[in-house]
Image: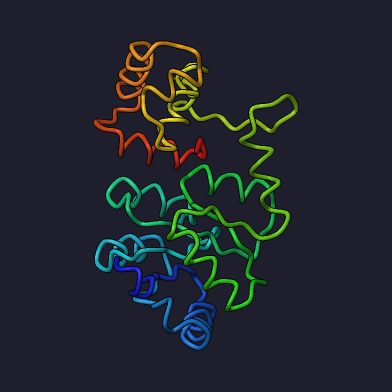
Length: 221
């Protein structure tokens, strides 16, 4: 996507009136920066529209009768890893926030958000930021923080990495060279290479770019 092009968006929500309202609001307040290219009212519709339109960002309702946002994420992210998901929900419950972020959404905002704020959130998640409504970020920090008392959420793929492998991956995903990582962690370049090879194997990644996306999806960066 060219920096001058509007961010393309698909709105997924089981309430047609709400979808129309979001579209109208974005067209009014952000027509030069955001373009709604599709809508869906169910999981099956969402999967089909995302595959057809290939939007930059999907605005995703958390609760829908046929599986909700988590089901959409599970069925679309493997095939379309380039699509970014931003949860847009009436719920501000910790378990809803944590589950949809764990499933792969890049942010979570509530439906009390204004049109301009929503447009800004869409642009920011497309650019790589993690965006949350006030106070919701605390839920995520608590759930993902590696500290005593945190609300742990199990991720088997992440848990298979050793602490040192996570350290190496985190720095690698930030763009550090092997030499810089070695100096920071006080290990040899050869040891860094060994850790990277292990991480590639465990995450089933084939290159640094895929590792960076993998780390970003799990908020290691």
